[in-house]
Image 1 (cartoon, rainbow, N blue to C red):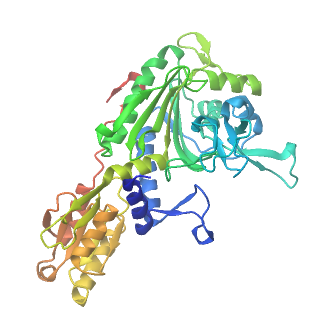
Image 2: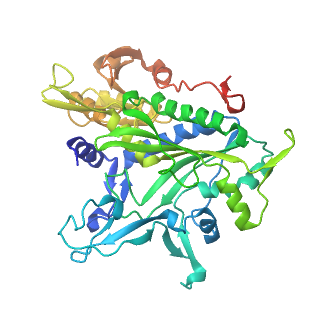
Image 3: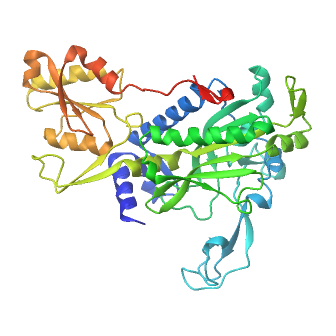
Length: 454
């Protein structure tokens, strides 16, 4: 594990972003709980993804399908076959298990023992429904959210009177019984996905693939990710998923190397044609304008919430040697320069001195006025410098300080996290000024069908 990743993990634990799951019982491998600040960042990630994907596209609608679904769905999708399985070997001595494609030698890397013969290990997590546990009551925790979209394709289309092309978006939990989860929250057995499936005429699939590829890259750039740490990696035919006619991974340069944070796929008509075959329901699209019938092709964008969370944290994390100002006595200060849309706390309010009750009362009054409009935190512990540094470390864009002049001129000081510039403003104008500084300057409205902005 790299030093940078260790520092990120330490910050996340210490400041309340991410905790190891079940820690008081010794922990539970590869599972994590998101703390008070972490849950706010996750909500902001999902909110901004939903806005860019659904609200700003007139032809994309939402869905929330169930985690538990008929096992027939997973048979039709191929998840119960060898195609959704890893080859697993077990050491005869220490009994640890490893994926075959991750082992470079004939002996166990832990103890040098011999391996058993490889066996297929399906990644689906099993459970049972009802009071009796047998084959008839067996079910599975979904390994992806996409299948819930495909089986509701006709329901959504008919109920909303939609015509192709259109998209269905969903955010939800998924579960995979990974053999070797690793790299903190990057690869875990329980995770959250943000997926959009765009249904279109097969003749238009290449055009829409390029459109969504561009849209997805721009989303990360608009949220402040360093463009030099993002790249597209096109997967060759022999390595990509069996259903994919084209597959591109959007990768981020993590401390542990370039890794996928999002997949963009042309899935062809695999999904709807297979569900039509297994369910005996006609899922073909009757295109009256073009006078033809076909199974729609699917362009998929699939994002891991935790993976993007980690990428945003790594990208925002900075260390400033010698402190951030002349008064600082710290040899090194840490700043989390999260984009203002993602920051868990938008505004922090301080009294200059805790012992001065008039300042405390005024600061609390300002805090009460702001908290209904912004994610706001009140802090009076320690020196003003320490309070600034605490907020810098959790990514708060703006700090508001009430000082002795506030009592006379009814003005406060706004301090900018990134520039460290301070601006004096009237309390009566404070809310509107902060609103402008935090304003979501969203992109123009998108019309995907015309493949241009309005």
